[in-house]
Each structure stands twice: as C-alpha cells, then as structure tokens.
Length: 508
Ligand code: ADP
Image (spheres, rainbow, N blue to C red):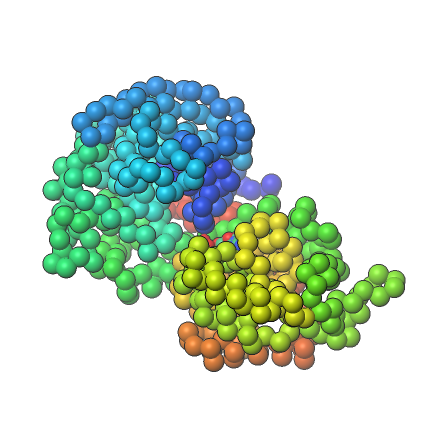
C-alpha cells in the first residue's frame, strides 16, 4: 500500500482476549487485528499478546516457536508458563500458555474455569513476560474488562520492579461488560484487593451502598490507565451522560478520547471480493446489479423489477424494487422490535441474516421465517455465514441498522463500501458515520437515512423516505450509491488518531 511512514516509530504491545481470525468472538477481535496491521504499515513495531486458548487452530499460525518458559503467579504459586511466538495475518503474536486449566475448552469464552481469575492471571503473565525478557514497549494497549486489571498490576507492582518505560492505553469496545471482580480474586493475582475497594478506585458503582466486596475491572482499568479510548465520538458522549461508569469517566474526562473504528478494506472490497460472482466499483456498478439478481434468484425471491437480465445480458431498469438487508447478531442491543417491524412492513425486498444466541429470540425469528420464507419478498436466514454476508452487502440497495445503542458499528460501514445506502438509528458510531439525506444544513455529508425514536413510526419515516428516493429520484440515488462507496472508513484513515494518543502519553 501507499501508506506513509510515521516519523517517530513506537513499540506497541496489545494485551487482548480476542484477535481475528484465530480467536474472534465479536468486533474486539477485528479491531485489534485491523489496528495492529495499520500501525505496522505506518512503520511501528506491534505485538499482540493473546492467551493460547486450546481452541485456537495451530495451522492458522505461521512460524510458531516456543520462546520463553517462565513462572507466573496465581493464588500463592508460580505456575509454569510457556510463551510462544508466531505470525497471524502478518502480525507478530505472543501466545501465553499456562500449565494449569485456564483457557482450556472448545471456545474462546465459557470454558470451565473462572474467567475473572484466568484473565487476571493472563494480565500478570504478560507483564511478568516483559519483566523476564526485558522487553519494554512504549505502549501497552489493553482492551475491555478482561485486561482491565493490567493497569493496576503495572502501576502498583511491575512499575516498582523493573518496567519503567511503558504507558497504558485502554480501549472500551462495549460498556455493558463490566468485569465484576471480588477482592479475593485480586488477592489471588498478587495484589492487595482491599486497596481497590474505594469509590475512587474500583468499587462497582452499581452495588447498593458501594459494597466493597464487589469491584469492577473495567472501572479499575479506567482509573489506572494513562489514556482511555472508546470506539466513536458519539458513544463517548453517551457514556459520559448515562450508565454506571459515567461518574468515573467524567472524573477522568481529560484522558478519555473517542476514535471511530475502521474496516478492513482489503477483506471488504467489492472490486476484488472472491465471494462475489461479479465485481464492481463506484464507477462501474453493473456487477452490483448482477449480485442482486443472483441473490434474488438464489433465494427464490420475486424477480420483480430492476434485476431482470435481458437476452443481451444487460439489466432492465424499468421497474424499481429496492432490496433491504439487515446483517446482525439478533440481540436486544440491535433493536429486535424494529427489525421484526421492518420484516412485517417492507413490501419490497428484505433479507435478514442473523444468529440469535437466546433461545426465545431464536424461536420468535424462526416463526417469522416460517411465515415469510415461502413468500415473494422476505427471507430470514438464521445462520452465521461470512460468505453470504459478502453476497448480501453486495446485492443490497439499503442496509438497515436500527440499534438501541451501538458503540461503533461495522455493518453500516461495510454496507456503504458495497454501495448499500444505510438506514440507521441515531446512536453511537451510527450517528458519526451516517448523515441524513434530508438534513438541509449538511448536504455535503449526506449519505443515508437517520431516525431518532425507538418506536415503529420513527423507523417507518426513514424507510418511506429511502424508498421514495430510490423510486422517484434515480439519479440522486445513483449519486448517493457512488458517494457512499467512496467514503474512506479504512483503518488507514483512523490509525493516525490512535498514534496521536499513543504519542501524547508515551515517555520520550
Ligand atoms: P457487533 O460487534 O455488536 O456484533 P458490529 O456491527 O460492530 O456489531 O459488527 C458485526 C459484524 O458481524 C459485521 O461484520 C457483520 O457483517 C457481522 N455479522 C453479524 N451477524 C452475522 C451473520 N449472521 N453472518 C455473517 N456475518 C455476521
């Protein structure tokens, strides 16, 4: 790529519970990998430290080698621990493998061990490894509650030993995960848990009378880190105004920054995407029409309107029927009642691709699938499929993201890159990336349809406007499709802001 190198090279070590693609559960994994790759290509030194989960497929790691055997502390003992080095997606990774039962099991989370204790152990094991190997990065970048204990261990223990140089940055990807922790669990990793049982430090503000027995690792991480980041400017404002951590974040506001996530523009590229039967770009959209046609045909949707391929392989654009796509985990955060409302209301074409972790939600959507999937215009696919998601973004005229809250959100950014115009609720990162077509004062940024309320009427209003633009203003619509495809939501564009934060706290 043509990325310019930053003049001042930093050494950054991410300490994280997830990394895409080898240990990915959600957005955290994508962010760590995308940010690390962007910083590497700007000329920085980056390592990722990850638990060596038993479920990681070793074939996906190249040049895996044992580099250090050492002991790391847990519950009065030094647990023999191995550190391995390997490369994943071009990024150097250090895998921490304790000899006890931590991180054993079939999946990244939900093993039969105490996760709080396991991640506290991991946090300490990473610092212990730096101490043993004399590696002193400029920045240790921790993420979410899982590694929120590391800043405590750093400032109250390892900084008093031999680690002097590193400064700590914490990214909060989703404030809902609080990292509940008891004093005795902190004791087990070698800290004095009672020290943190104050409101200024780590007491869980949700407990009645600030029960000193209940602490929050995320809150402790906020208090003890040199800088705190979250994944969009609007989510930053929202988290300062409400929620359990608002008062803590307000107290630390001067070190709190909101930076939008990027998307991986190599993986999400309609001009080269191997999952698409026809490629396209902002200047040539014929391939997109073909993708829509294949999706309609493949899923047995009514071939009404603009997807009809004529004998000479051109597409008859006489009748216009838009395709709305919604690709999401089916959980309350994502606005389930608005998704089901859209399914009932949209008479055009709509496809939902989603997986419901909750049994009751799943059966509700199964019922809707049975009701609609034989019909001409709606398909509800209750599976996780990376491949299908690429096809659907490519086929879509519109991508619907009606979240109740959304720290950043990737679906709207991916959709735009594939020429799908976003219809979103005005919250978090959605509010920072989508600007309404009918907002007269912001014509330059206009790229989609935005609604504020959480009621069905608010969504209807946005859907109706999108459909009428599509039908009645084809040239404006085509211009908007090209415009959204050319918006730069890449990591390249956003990594520089992270580097600025790193530079603002590093020790020179
Ligand atoms: P969150 O991290 O809260 O799930 P994001 O919008 O940040 O939400 O990221 C969701 C990512 O997961 C997007 O890349 C989206 O395409 C993908 N995704 C969600 N559900 C599915 C599914 N059923 N099949 C394939 N991809 C999915």
